Length: 109
Image (tube, rainbow, N blue to C red; front, side):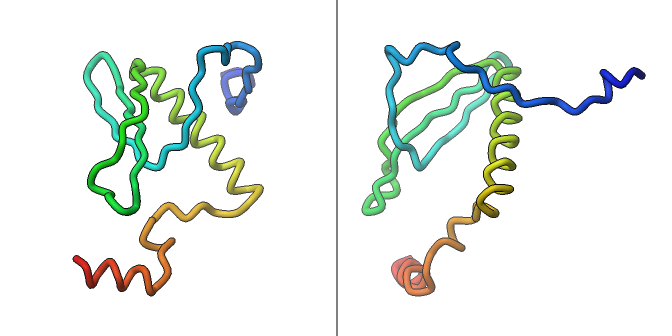
């Protein structure tokens, strides 16, 4: 094998390829995924802390499985860069709650 085949993949940030003219910007704190043989669908929404059972749907993004895999790889690279700069991201929501908030949830359940 040549050195070219053993070289690590490089993350390339593309600038100026996507027009923001018709772009919508929103905050999301919930997502769901659906798959078929031809596509992956990511549905983004916003959950109200007072009514977590009924998130508002904000957008649906359809893509091919190959594009979803490239997106997944780009997210992994981006999160690794973030964590090396700012520290580990806590991904377990239960660990983000204070003991008082956790007790309140357990009492209400």
